[in-house]
Every structure is written in structure tokens, then in C-alpha cells.
Length: 192
Image 1 (cartoon, rainbow, N blue to C red):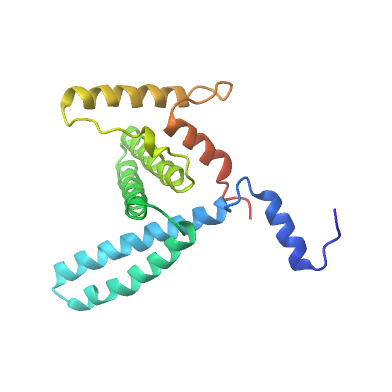
Image 2 (cartoon, rainbow, N blue to C red; image 1 turned 90 degrees about the vertical axis):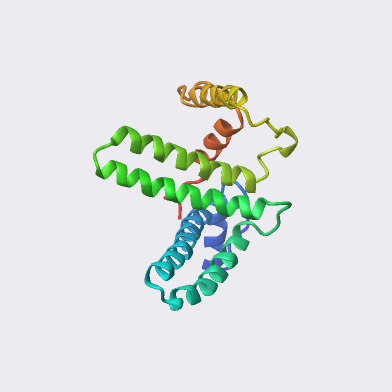
């Protein structure tokens, strides 16, 4: 290996060796949390404006939204179809489930909290799966909106989730289980 020319180049080489994927997911993970909070701020500005009757809250939304959009472009530079909006809603839903889980935990409802935290993480993994092209949209099929099909789909997802919880000696099965395993390995916020 060639000797680094300066400290900056040395640090860049070290950082490059830490990456599991060309995207620096540890840094991108921090960025997604910031984006989640900006989405929440947008929502709170709407509700504050409505509750107080002060348009000044509404006037702040545009600036916050622009900041959020600019940060999202760092993680999602190109996309097709509705991926941008889906991504935003996956992050927003994940954040909300975390908040509701935290409230349930503070009320002593630990099992409900754990369930909500796991659902939040599932959505967060879907976000990464979608934005790292780990989801094959050709496999996504329309399911008629009836109770029988929904129950069948729920049973399938439950079965896949149970497989994902089997000790690490077995390979995870199903798209969501594989994404969760990938995110666990690739997103390490402790690597700086």
C-alpha cells in the first residue's frame, strides 16, 4: 500500500476501510434521524399554527421543508416513481412509532413499547432496503383488499419475522428479514 501524502488522505483511507457499503451508513443513519426530526418539525408547525391561529408557524414550514429536502437528496440522489415520498413516509412513520413506543414504555407498558420499537425498526429497514435497491419491485404484487388475503399476508410476514429471530447460525429468510440483517451489520453508528 502506498504511503499517504498527508493526514487528510490517511483519514480518508481509514474511513474507506470502515465502510461495509460504498454509502457511509453510519453517517447516513445520523442524517436519517435528522430528517425524521425535520419531518416532525414540519408537522408540529402545522398543528401549532392551527391550534394558536398564528400564521407565523405556517410561514416557517417552507424553510424547514427545504432543509429536509436538501438533506434527503444526500441519501436519495436519484429515484424512480414514488420512492422519494415513500422514503419520507417510512422515516416519518418510524419516528412516530418510536415516540409512541417511548410513551408506552414510560407508562409501564413494556411489551407494547417493544412491539412498537420493533415495528419502527422494520420501517427503518424498509427505508434502507428501498434506497439501496435491495427490494425488487417486480416481486411486489397487488393484493385484493379483503380480510382473507390480509390475514394470509400477515401470517406470512409473521412467519418470516420468526425466522429472522432464529439465532445467527441460520440464514434469514424473506426480504424484510434480509434487510434487517443487512442494516444490523452495515449501520454501525459507533464507527466514526
